[in-house]
Image (cartoon, rainbow, N blue to C red; front, top):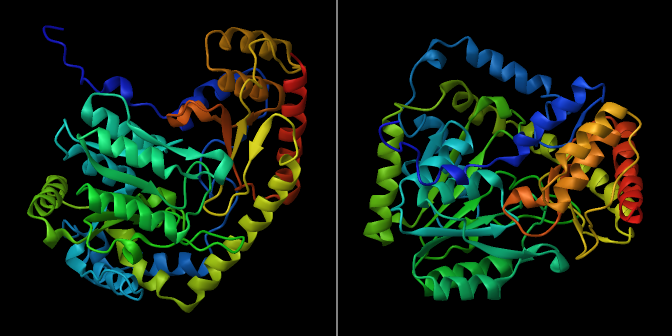
Length: 433
């Protein structure tokens, strides 16, 4: 090319959750049956959208206005409904004007980071959900800046690490929180969120809180909304229907803006996000139209409770099978639908392996494991030996070694097989050195 047209942040755009798919498909062509544990799609794993929700969607599809543009910020009636839901709690109050719709949270994430000045950063957790970490790093054309989640303390944020990095890096202008967390499944206590808000207040930062799993909690845990603790700090909460209904293919999410009127710079930043969205005209209309009828239906609360009961059972099953395995650290999942397994320091070595019956798959995995992180090496061997496709922890912008699986398999016998197989293969792999 005449000029180097590649963005300085292009190398930061990584999404291991889907990149592992290409490798899995190689093994599928070699005769390995793949068990997809890499991505958080409940529908692909057998969950059914209840008939009553499908009926409400069908009714909306009969209305002519369903096929029209929506306003840039989203349908007014839907934003009014969501503001009413948010204001039921005792925290900061919002109006419909504080709600902005996007084509899924991936769209929202892109615009939230994309409208920041390149020199100013949002510090986020590590392990990190790849969409956040990649988008933030790409906007800056630099490596992702992170604070540590502590596997020895239920994957809660290391608040001292966060405070020190904020204190000594003046480019940091915002803090990202994911609660409940992806990939760890942690649900943060109110006190931790209050301390993060205190840090933001002390250093005049804003907060981004990804709350896409806010209502998917169990084992006695309840996620505290950012709105309940944010006090006078400026912030954004990200929410959506992809995980709750579940309807990931709808690509429908929104942000709630808190305290923009308290800071003219933050208010102008939020306006730039809306203006950026205006260039797209609007977000998809159909899912917006059904949100009030679905979430306002008396059956919705029971629908969520039923799903949470299933995830609770699976989280307990997985934890019981894995918690006592030597060489790994496992915390019980309490929110979202992921399970993170971390290998203890020095547990992984470059000469470990699994027995692989398929000779072609064995030959291919031996090629793939050259010069890759040690946890990815395990993931490739697991894939070739069992067909189970998980995501290496180093793929979540993290130096810790491990992997993330899901709690989404709807066939109980198959889910039990996955957990037992993970246990057996971890033990076999660690003993093979």
